[in-house]
Image 1 (tube, rainbow, N blue to C red):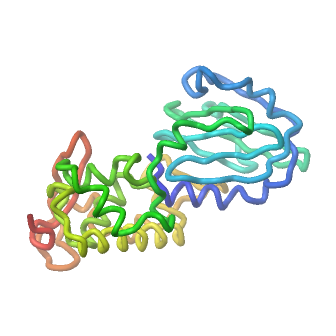
Image 2: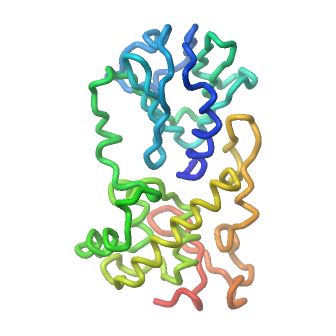
Length: 267
């Protein structure tokens, strides 16, 4: 699933569409993608794209009279002027001649078109974005005091902090030397600050490298991201730790793979 750096990289690739009017809307097999309360997507026609916002893993397209909330799910891809494929479910043709194409083989994405005054619960209920100023060591330390859930699970909860997924959780915990099995409320203030610092640093470096591509993720120009070349522990099980040369361990936490160094990240 695309995480914050991948979604932000996609958003940056779409900015040239801002200010353009949508001339035609084509939607196919939208039943599992479109919120049941969403307005009809035909209303997008003749609307001008005014702004593209991101919070965590969600994008919000601001138009003249409406706003469109989008989540890429597991395999969603947004392309500008790309090839229309078998699993392309939404094509927006712009008056300028450009196209925005949403392709999603697994159809786990999410769309919702609403009037401008509407507040999306999925957006409003998110915790602070990793790159927002209100996400701080003080916030993490205070918010986690009553939670005994393991720290990796805590930062994956989008109501606590928006944008972290499996890749960057493992990478940030390794960089901050925090064991992923530790209860969230066991972190000290210093450790909380370190974890926030590493989350921000790693996210920014990933954005600089246009995100991480393993399989489905592609940028709006169809190219792959490059941050997979900088990963320290994710999918590195049985390889030497880059810090101490101890062997990287892979475990399962709530159905998700976690990668860490038991020597550098002691309980």
